[in-house]
Amino acid sequence: MSKEMENDLKLLWEKEAQLDMHGWNFDHLKGRWLNKEMPWDYRKIVLKYLKQDASLLDMATGGGELLLSFKHNTARTSATESWLPNIKVIKERLLPLGIKIYPTKTEEELPIKDDSVDFITNSHAAFNAASVYKKLHTGGFFITEQVGATNNFSLSRYLDESYTPPYPESTLLNSIINLKSAGFEILLAKQSFPELIFFDVGAVVYYATVIPWEFKNFNIDQCFDKLLSLQKLIDANQYISTNEDRFIIVARKRA
Image (cartoon, rainbow, N blue to C red):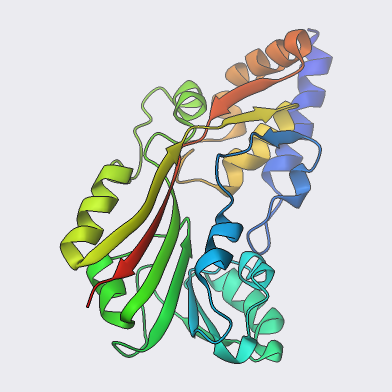
């Protein structure tokens, strides 16, 4: 690869690293990556248990995209969010629909009364099992899909040889133990490691930029040689891949 081509790639990747993400979606990567399907559908599992008259709280709702896909009664729906850019988004998107919003300082925070909701959903956000238990009515449901400790480990470790998982305690086993200790009955618990495929290095750069907790020391200059190696691999094989780490739990509050 010529020096001129390397410079062109660097300029292209620097543009990717400067892009922001609004809400919680990866529309910018459409057609540039592929998420292999998991053996469950989080949305369908939620809808299996969620009754139309239930009071629903979505923790750390992001931009509210997933919450809105539930098509739940908005008068019976509320959401928390701690990231300021997303709070602005959901105030514009959810408030006009009648959905109540609770801005928080942390993902785990639940600023609602104890024993006040029927259903709490949580997609990829931290939670405190004892706190969730307190907020639910007896017989209420908590459904969460979590990112496991080894998520994208191979790619993160390749770009940063000193990388260690930021949330090593985020495992299916730990979560089940914590929920059962809080008083929950576990109705479903599954784990999967689906392949995540990237078709161009710019997509990797964007991805690493918008989720810095998994790519803490990532920047173009320090990782440039490794990015060039990824480029050569894509030139030869048309893609590179890593593995996600996901688990899902459906829990019900015991009497």
